[in-house]
Image (cartoon, rainbow, N blue to C red; front, side, top):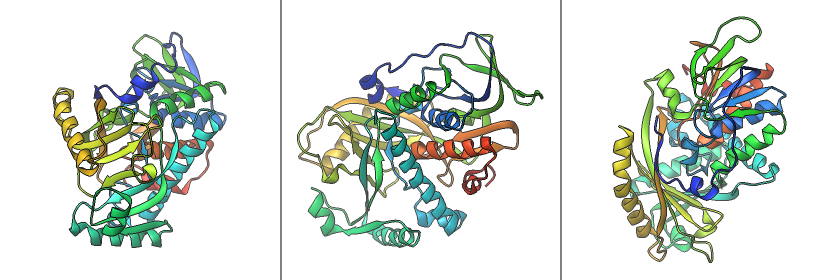
Length: 403
């Protein structure tokens, strides 16, 4: 599947960070990871830390799919509010999902700090704006639910917003547990670090047929289109939104999102605390900054129909994003330097699918759908690592198939 349109900023800025060979031999390993994006890299990193012999295979260059298109706002807040999620799966399970997402943000930050290259990581606050007056009671209820669950969150009124920003909104939720990162560079840093501990990574190696239950010590065989195979004890499918070509779950919908990155602004912080900003409207506008002084603006999501339709929509969507940003920040005259679109998936409850599937023996899935894909990639790494080690993890039931 063609996963993106336009010129994603991260690919242009970072260039070809590292080159990996194509697989030209038959190999064996403990765990084969299909997918060399940020989720596959996080899963492989955790497995290598646990002592597993891991091979990562990707049909493209590493990080070249949806990873290069994500805007990488690292937040624990899910698209469904804690209150909404509680009505779907129960208040305590919903609170634990939010805690897992927050722990995912912390895990990503801790790994980046230990890699030697922080990959543009910066700790940020998050400001969730009420688009309409009717949203104020919803935000007040959400603040109460989160505080009951142990989260530190403030409810700002209109005057509080006006003191901090050049625009007005009826209310906002303010939290401090967010971050931003360069996802493409982070992916390569994870793979590079894990490679020093034995990880073997091969790109431009498309997996064709798969046998998951051959028996023996290595029951999994992955046959590549180059005519070689990898035999493994287990396989992890970390193929992002292309996973749905295999699973075809009715609860998962494909959508497209659009983004632009400005020319560098320079000078002081463009807004209060350089916070991540998003809103209650659906689809919502969102924005962040980068470590080289740019502003990234995203949103205008729509249903995915085809790559061609997404390509055609990009100029119009970019113009709308620019107008909406300018309405909020009229004194920030930004000029788009890069504009792109990416395809993503969303689930009915806003949660990923992580773990085993009844129809796929000897396999785990790391389908980190939705707007929290990077934090949940870290969660997937921990859950799959624990499954490999035979260690119980109480969070495994939160993200299981058939929930």
